[in-house]
Length: 517
Ligand code: AHR
Image 1 (cartoon, protein in one colour):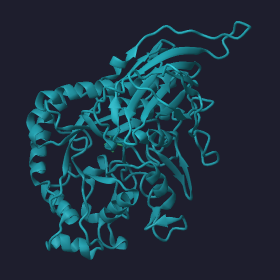
Image 2: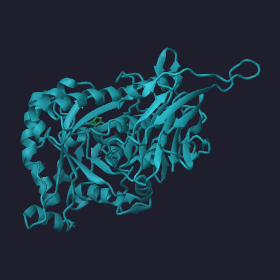
Image 3: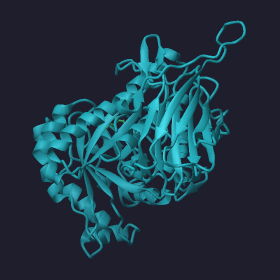
Image 4: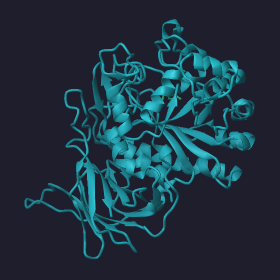
């Protein structure tokens, strides 16, 4: 059930002020959710995150050290840990990104004061290795997330990778297992996912697909976890629409691959040299960004189709292990730091809906990134922390973790601005693990409210409740001074009619998540 399949045009009506000037356009739309036709499970791992060793993403953003005046748990900011726990982050990818292919795991074990300082060739600055294997794995445990480690193929070796895994997972008396214990961790850790190379077509070594497939086979042979652990091995997938890469890697290594990554970033301009600003943008940039974000639907469909040729049973996960918005970094800001507005919330909401629609194949994803980097969940400034609009979408959408997807058809007029056209309403629905039916509706139009008739044939809801995320302006942001400018509030605009149809009054530029019981 791809995006295009659930978008069908329908006429709309406008309400006019008595002067004849439109004061609040309202259109109608219809959504049909087929509760009696459950689809694939939405794996909670699609709500995963990515934390790379760069800028203030980890140092300052997550890690402040045990001696910091900022409240911390074993050196990790308590406010950040608590906020992440609250949204049940299922999996965290670390230490990169591009940095993974220059990372030496031995730099990050043993006494912190003695750890080497390395240049970060990918992103600038220096890495002091305060957060190494023990710290990251402890952090993942604190948050309650599974660990997705990215192994170094670009400058490392199968030997280094295999030693790292033995150090992490060894439960016997090998030297590496004993070294881990001597460094303070008695029990082996569980490593859920292992990335083998990152963007190996680019920063990870500028390899060609055929060469990478052979390299992958070699590394995968020696990527073993001990103690009977199952390790999901993730191949470095394509850059956006590089279908030739997917073809070459699947043809050469499908049997050894458990998950295949795809990276896609949303740029308002589509131009890497002038991506566009994170703040103070107009409606042109708003709609261009949404349109660019929607392209991920086609990417997933086409990469999946290639995977289907080599893996018709869909054993291999398509892991969108980097996604999100990428704007121009403001002068003076730390590497890849950007603000996060209502527009980012829209991008997150429609992207997660697309993942739901492809739940059968997309079973893991990692938004880039967790704190202070790109489309972050959280921004920090010394002792202060702010939750971004994107965080609030991950909060609202928690109900979809491990839920069973339900087909949702939308009939709505497109939203058109200056010749650019996107669907006028997005819907995604699922039966939650709590038994309720959850429906998320996204109205991307900044000026047009929507009256939505939500039909659930064959099922009747007794009651409906919900929450809504919106703001007065499209570029509304949360700042350290006004941290709650964009945050979800209770939604009372939905009622169940005697015929079972739910009438929803959706504000403009809004994300509504309904719970039906
Ligand atoms: O997320 C930032 C960077 O984007 C990652 O390091 C890299 O994999 C991608 O190009």
